[in-house]
Amino acid sequence: MNTSETFETGCCPRFHPELWQEKEITFENKLFLKDHVTSVFHIPLNYGRVMTRDTAKIEKAGAKAKEPLILTDEKSPWGADVYIAVGKEVPKAGMEKISGTFLTKVFEGPYNNMGKFIEEMEAFVLSKGKETKKLYYYYTYCPKCAKAYGKNFIVILAQI
Image 1 (cartoon, rainbow, N blue to C red):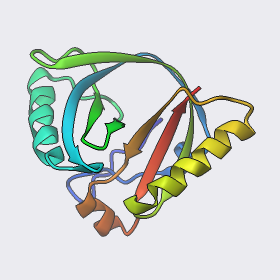
Image 2 (image 1 turned 90 degrees about the horizontal axis):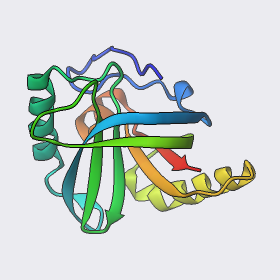
Image 3 (image 1 turned 90 degrees about the vertical axis):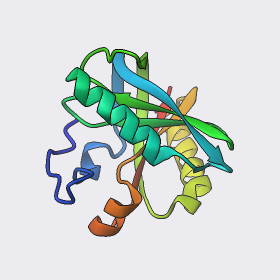
């Protein structure tokens, strides 16, 4: 799924929701650099520091993915695992391959609507006669870029 290489902000590329809205996608051993972010009630405390560190490792290894994708697994109110898509193994980094079929749905709005978004996602999965095994979140913009673009898109990927 091409999310465009237009980096108008110099940070996050412009997101195209139509490429992710109500799609079924399959990952076959999709390679990610895996890291962990510390949170308090799902509010990340060190996300920027983790992304800066991981981006440096990815760039040094020449492992940038063709299409940017960062998935978050909100494991608990106290932390989340982040998965950054990469093009190849990154030395001295935790690596993980993700396989599976996912239903996707795009939401737009503030993060405090996540409970509502999750309910809508679960209803969408059920409407397709499927059952959710796990949810991943794709936060398409950092807060500064969301403000610059005037939208705050969140893609929920339900592994089925």
